[in-house]
Image (tube, helix red, strand yellow):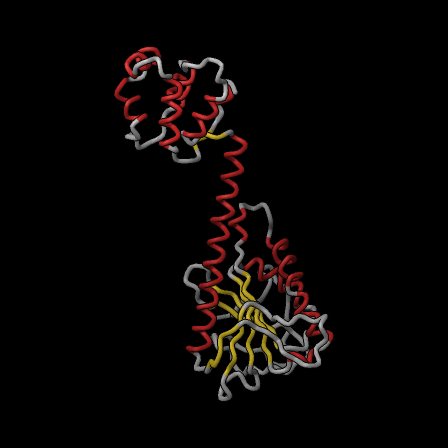
Amino acid sequence: MTVEEIRSYKQIRTPDYSLLANLVSKAKGPDRTMAQFAEVTGIGASTLSRLVNHNIKKPLALDVIIKIYECRADEEDTYLLDSLARANGFYPADYAQRVKDHESMAARRNAQLNREHQMKNALIAGVAAAGCGITVVDRPILRTKDLPAIYPSRLGDFILQLKENTTLGTTRNWSFITISRLVDEEECRYDAKFFARRFFQSCSDVLLLDAWKPEALKGYKISFAFVDKDILGEFWNAVSIAKVHTEMSLILIDPVSYRVLDEIWVPGDYNPMTNISVFRVPAPVEDDVYEETEDFYEEDPE
């Protein structure tokens, strides 16, 4: 490790003050006083004393690290420079970038998990506020004796089991699949079509079950909830031609207020079991026309 190479290092960690103190003492060596070491390095004796006594509160400047290294007692110790830099929180630029990318990914994932939690709360609150009695909020496990093992047993992220006097007609189980991704958080590396395709693939087991054994889903309504309008639009382009046998809808939620903005029914040959949208969005009627528009679905004319 050379001085020129160390100049490209980046500060990404808080210093390990105990290790830094030990390394400064090692650089000083046993045969020099702190005052003598201060004189040869050009660093104040008081500064060096605070270093070895753990009395500093911020990282050292890179030039200070270099001066300590260049005046080290053991001139053959070429590893001391890198050790001092890392103890001070400096790391190679490529490693620093990987750490930054990882932390950025972790932050995005935490934000996504928070959105999932908020979306779930918004959906449950919306159903409850509409007067629909909820008996159970649970994981959507499908228990059907004659269902072959090749079919999925889990339908979505959570399920609402509704009371008999619900306004949702014969619907007794409302399963929700939440898609909490936002396109702009990926800094435009991926577009809405990419995420819609990926989520369509992840939901393909539900759609296959609807196609191959729709009777297993009798009494179910399945809703896909989004916070990104563009992903919803691309997902709609794919699912709208599926002609499903089970009542399904796409729900758009505001990612700031977490208010349900829209609900769109997926066309199919099922009889809609929902008389009205619990989110106060009109339910489909016979002969509805689903037209693709620039915004991927038609807005309420009001």
